[in-house]
Length: 302
Image (tube, rainbow, N blue to C red; front, side):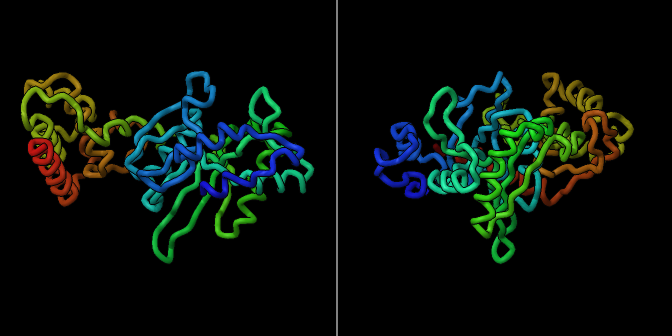
């Protein structure tokens, strides 16, 4: 990837310019390279103005922080991160500059420039994802755009360069997705639980406090004691019964839902779902608790 991005060296003979210093710095930093936990996006939230709508979000699939440059990117990311078939997510993936330049010239489309300059820009695809594994492994690229932007001729031109780029690769599917493709009820539910996938670093007033809360909540799901109560109400009762700080069991509920220890067919406003609509996967719960104990032992040994 670094070689592809670096391009040739006879810049003085060309009819375009590019900020070589910036591009080489990005390559040296490893941007656009790696996979899964080691991948580094070409653009980060610090690089692009976002009107405060950028997101840095930990990925369940990749176990790293992702850089999402808009709300619509973040919402698509939540769905990708939840999907079982998605095994890697690479956001802000850089396209080979020499190839996009050639495509633009062939199509008679002005190549994108850095904002406020005449320097050519390294184009990126919003998401390049790996789906499946082994013989079933495939690559899928997504361009994420608000639907109204598709009425902008310049946006369409840039997308055409991107489309031709991935078509030429031969082994990568390419799609455009807008907010119209989003299941917003599912997005809302995933957003609610997403930040609690990992509870490492959460303050515990005593050793084993959170594990005890997990057991209490799991027991409540299995028993009939709170089945008719909304999830948030049941968690408030559990907090009071165990003399825990308000919100403790709701945080644990979000964690167990995120880890698929607890499942439900309810998609809308999970915190309002009756506890009776939840199901506990005891095998996954045992795995999670073993993981928690092992992590605790590793911290104590450090």
